[in-house]
Image (cartoon, rainbow, N blue to C red; front, side, top):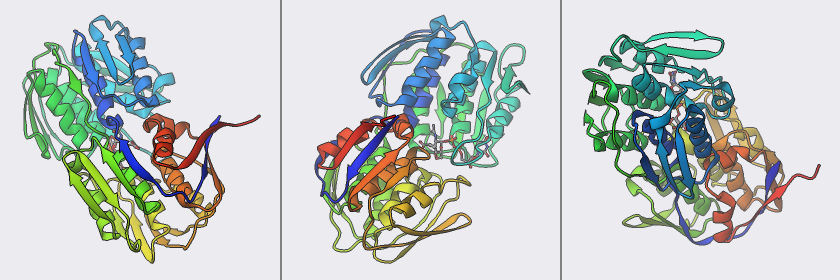
Length: 423
Ligand code: EPZ
């Protein structure tokens, strides 16, 4: 197994280019199931989750040509409608094929994703929405078996009890091929949802309310879509993570190919911690702070502060001058990094869904274990300032969602190297 070895204490400088967004690319790839003709996607990040979903499509019978950041996907040849456990267990976002498979083929089976390191993560809201559109759903043998009504899914009025990114995406994709109008109330409005809406609209699906919490979709009545070439938006969480790399090392670094509007919440918090920014189009530079101040954070849905940035900010708060409070409201178990950060000398005390982070003078290198994707990046960030050597193990979590993290950090001047465990 690979691990990352970091010798902390180096200042960073230079420019890093942000990759396409994993969480935008996944639903976009799933949406290609709504088409029976080839779709070209560009600016895909080079991460394991993308390869996993493309593999799932080939297992269903789709044809995929994937090289670098570009993939051409032809789902005209899909013959199987079953997403097997082996793939879904590797990546719970595989559930995103449920809506499009059901909408296009009228029937499908998708393995039920289990819980994960950050919480239970049920899919009840996805299923309820599809049932409102007339689907019969049965859970048997660990699989969701969904069957559309005679003639196909029907438009419906769907009110989500809770804002759900994946649930909104599955419903949008199902609604695109349904008969009639679907209205989604309390829809998620993350940039990744906007990308999916824009992609569906580019194939002629009428969608009102893009970027708001009320979406109205006119389905094609079962007619497959033809998509023009689609470019994946920049990864706002990767961008936020590099801003935190600049912050924790108190360095000046520049990020290219960023959508600054998508990272406003992170910029605001870093400003309150004492950092300044220069913004020029899709380029942003973080300037060092005189003193890193503590911060109070509550994770909420977009445009609020993202749960996917909570762990990275906790790493920065760990060396701030004073006490920070960080409350996690989206996932019940997204604090696995706390004990690992404490192994590096952080002083973090957890009570319920809030972490009290007392800033310390110094972190010290140690062996730590990655527990989920963003927790892993927080440990890498902490390793960048920790005195001595930090080994971050179980980095397969990182590889799922960060495109060449160690290469990009090394190019900025970090002393970081990927190593293989000697057995
Ligand atoms: C997406 O997960 C992201 N994943 C997550 O990023 C991100 O943390 C999350 O949205 C929140 O922003 C992808 O886009 C692939 P949700 P998703 O449905 O869609 C509850 C990362 O690190 N809920 O918006 O699964 C759920 O348990 C990942 O890149 C239900 O109760 O998140 C959670 O508490 C991790 N029932 C809340 O809603 C449901 O049917 C929000 O989850 C669905 C969700």
